[in-house]
Amino acid sequence: MAHTETSTGTTAATEAAPNDGLKRNAIGTFGIAFLVISAAAPLTVMAGVAPVAISRGGIGAPVGYLAAGIVLALFAIGFMAMTKHAKAAGGFYTYITIALGKTVGLAAAILAVVSYNCLQIGVYGLFAVQTQAMLSFVFGLNVPWPIVAFAAIVAVWFLGYRGIDVGAKVLAVLLTAETAILAVMGVGILAHGGASGVTAGSFAPQAMFSPGVLAILGICFAAFMGFESTVLYRREAKDPDRAVPRATFIAVGFMSVFYAFIVWTVVQAYGDAGAVDAANSQQQGMFFATIAQYVGPWAEVAMYILIVTSVYASQLAFHNAINRYVYMLAQDGVLPAFLGRTHRKHKSPYRAGQVQTVLAAVVIGLCAALGADPYQQLLIWVNTPGIFGIVGLQGLVAIAALVYFRRHPEAIRNRLTVPLTAASAVLLFAAVVLIGVNIELLTFADAVTNAVLMSIAPVVFAVGLLLARWLRRARPAAYARIGSTESGSTEAHDA
Image (cartoon, rainbow, N blue to C red; front, side, top):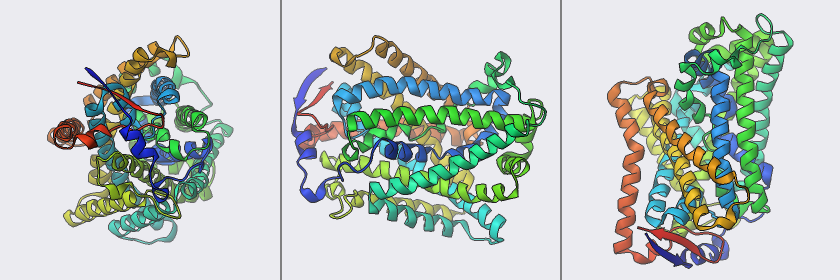
């Protein structure tokens, strides 16, 4: 690998015109944490997906969430250690560029943009389904799903346009409400002693190490999607060297413990012997029936309403993350310059937001015209490539951190940092394999459809590699700017 050193990308990113800069000192530690936890949509992944985890993983399902959280915490150790030195402002894109070179870095950026779009746009299908259910249950109304989805697109665009500080405040309220209703359910179950007394059967060896728990790891990792995007808000954070790492560990720590606790309490609601049968028979209605039984009908109504706001919060958080990836790529000269402009008043990357909004509207329109099922085809099938892409990129970032530590041993503050980061890389790529082996648990699709969905992430990455090679030959100035940081220079090692 040839070692190259450039300051062009940094200059382009940091010397933007006054009206083209993101809003500085806009959010603190908890604001960033709210953004990334909201992307994961705790109420949605619990009420909408956890019954599948219990059905397939058995009463050991809570352990799956803890295991995923532990792996991601290991990943965060190396990720955040690198953050304090590299000070990258473009998420996975710049971290991979710094350590593995501009070609791999740009391919990672393209994959990240596509993966986050898959996650964000696919969730409009879930929003439509959950809103339809809420309107029917609470108000007796039947609204076509495309109308609901288009309304959500407009609402997401509006808050994204208003700026990160406004969005963070809204997400803080919505996240507090959705976690509160889950906590109320959990406490209610324990206060009543569950179905037949509170037990620790979920954590018995035969439950923890059952084949079913390994099979649902893909579902469990999907519940954390978006936590790694804390670094995208570095330029808008107050005291980013502290706020970003703190928010990252708060997010992964909270989600892993909270998810495991809630799923364990739902197992208690039906007993070790009856939880799997209840999950199979009630499916997505399991959490609603549980909260109605142990808390009351009012709580069921509240959960129906709050799951809609939960999905909306997730869409807004992913919308913000996508916009910042696109903004950084435009600032680095890879994408058209107009996408790197921010709003004069709100300091939001509104041009990138407009493009993402139009893309979402086109996909929703096509699905509606083709008569696609909003849950199966729009949510599940569109989301699946995004899950593959993000978990794979997490593994690649772990490798990038190891390479960076080898070149910059001064970044290592603890002798466990390197072995723990190496372990996270192995475990993350193992998770990708497990997701692939058990993909039918995510998609419920035929073999051909699953093969197509699994191929999207590697194909996009390969296209990104080819695009980088083309840029190197045809637009060397743009290629030289790939991978901006906030330091005086951007270091890259290219093949």
